[in-house]
Picture 1: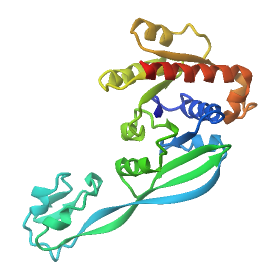
Picture 2: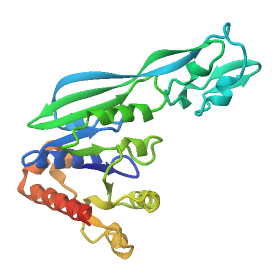
Picture 3: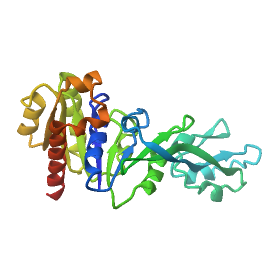
Picture 4: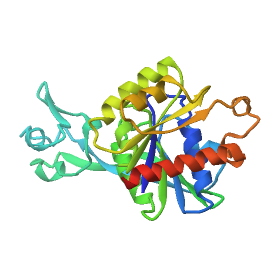
Amino acid sequence: MIVAFVSGSFQTGRSTIAANLANYLRKTISVTLLDSDIEQLESSILLPPIWSKESEITVLSPIHDLDACQHCLSCITKCQSSVFKDYKDKIILLTELCSHCGDCVDFCKGHAVKLQKLTIGTIHKASYNNLTVLEVRLNDSAVKANSLFYHTKSYLDPLDVTLVDAAPYISDYACCSTMGADYFVVVTGDNELHFKQLKRTLNFFNNFKKPYGVLVNLSESENNQTAEYCKNNNIPLLGVLPFDKKLESGEIPRHQLVESPRWHELFASLWEKIQEELSQ
């Protein structure tokens, strides 16, 4: 089972919640925490894990030899990803569109297209108190993350509960970073800006046909406009997490929030509601 934590923007506390829920669950079940927000170094830093393995993710990317090119245009007419373009009688490559299928080598009559290995990112694996931690990061030279996330799936244990700290929905790769989750926890803050961003995110989910619920974080009161909005629109409300001055000041380590009795109860309730939603 895969549960993805998403939001409409940055700084909603999504990573803190995912890390603490993983810390809570590891005591009773096998859990993997996947940090797939490739622009934010958050979840893994929260837990201070012991890194044990780093894997490079490589794909085959086309290169083109102009001297060998017969200008037959087969690459243009047959490439389903529209990687090849004819510009002023020369073939140019838009490699950011490539799906890395490798078919272009077969239909190039002049054998001008060849494949080279391209490292698109890395996956780090670690452990933290019986919890598996995975961190996926995009290579600086790579231009899109789809292939990286596709290869990440092979690192997930299907018997584990996998919690995904996914990219916010203002990112271009937000959908693929959720790893095809079975359930989505939409994390939002309790202010006017977060409320507007939440409504835009929920418009997307209404057409997505996947189960989801809303979790309000850093709230001064359980009676807030987001909770009321969810109630009036029949949107599952998974809970309201309070603003904690000790957490904000750093007095409580962010990954150890669940160790306090009050927060332990809140995360237990959150997991119970997620399971209830999944069982419907």
